[in-house]
Image 1 (cartoon, rainbow, N blue to C red):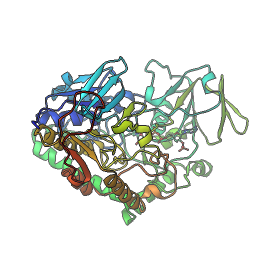
Image 2: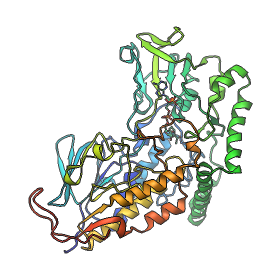
Image 3: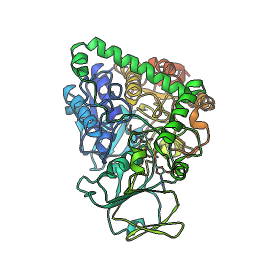
Image 4: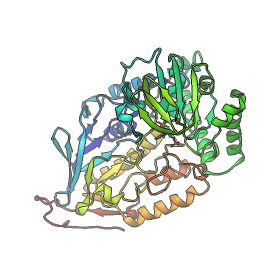
Length: 505
Ligand code: N01
């Protein structure tokens, strides 16, 4: 079969979509379309703009390896600065013409005979593609709690990931529900302007102290800008440092104990009132959930206008929140910092693979993929930041770029005429997932807490291995783990099987 430039549809223009579009363009692919449902690029950084939003990963590592930025204002940049960075990267790398904003994908369906995907948007447009890349993000679909009466509240109810920038919070009585990284940031920010703030905490979190508003040292930007080699070395050292953090999470060690003791100390030193400290003390080990980092939260919750509410929420009334002890807490605004449906991935999009298999059926027991990217039953489809992506340890830009290069390797073979269709085997996927399950054993995420890391099937949806394993797995595709098909597509839909099949599994 003669090769040709594949038609590629990338769904999503966040961290994963930007990485993929850039890597594919660098490899000379010219037929790329990025469909993004939002009105801007940036993914999570576009959708989240709640007060206090800051990235708790240092900006000198929370960036694309291919788009180094020396001149961050802060060591931990705020949300608007990170969103500007993503916009700038897209502009500077010339990716803008590839991206269609305000274009929500509602379905993607594989045609066995034609060996193509048909991608349908909410507006009813269709795109025919040889490959689809789902770069739809992990923390994307807001989780709205099922609290009786919530819909009948008289005032504004706002989820942090859909913040209303016109919402007036100054001088208001504000209730914040949820205490993940988001809840802690939003409480710390709103406490300064609210008349009163009540923080509803069902399970307290360990909050590790760090000077999050620290500016980048004077002269750093000029130095790193002038010496890109030095900047690269700094980036590599931070990558190395993040491996230590990943190791701390994945295996017990003295380092893990040290960080856990530091988290306990952060609470003990900042909260002197034993009763409040008791209420703020989790019943699980530090690091078990995604670690919350803040230098502001403990002081904020002890301010005169702040209150910690650990009583269960019974219902929301038109004027406030009633707790299980019968008390009615009057409030003007309810903020839902209640997290995300992290395991939906590309859903509710309707994705139909080979033989009519739907993604909902394939993932009936929870999402699973081979090497975070390939799903049995779904030929010529890959995910970037898919199941088991290392949201808890290795930074997302890094794994996105590696995954994009892996996908590019398959696309190069399509372009060279070596394959028309590629689909991971069930055997390889099961083997990988068995390895994941074993490796999860000694991780700190498995030490007895609930968190968004757990899927419906009670598996932990993270990367439990070292970075080397990711580099190895994504460095070179293994044919034996895939059905690789080389055949002429047929013209009519579902009209027959492939003509020539070279299955190496
Ligand atoms: O969400 P979460 P998040 N009644 O799922 C509570 C990333 N992030 O948006 O633990 C009462 O962590 C729930 O309580 P419980 C980061 O990876 C990064 O805060 O289930 N409470 C929990 O307290 C992070 O981990 C940055 O008992 C209810 C909270 O809501 C991830 O996003 C910044 C409830 C949800 O916490 C998600 O964080 C912000 C109910 N019915 C976020 N339902 C960076 O800085 C839920 N809760 C990079």
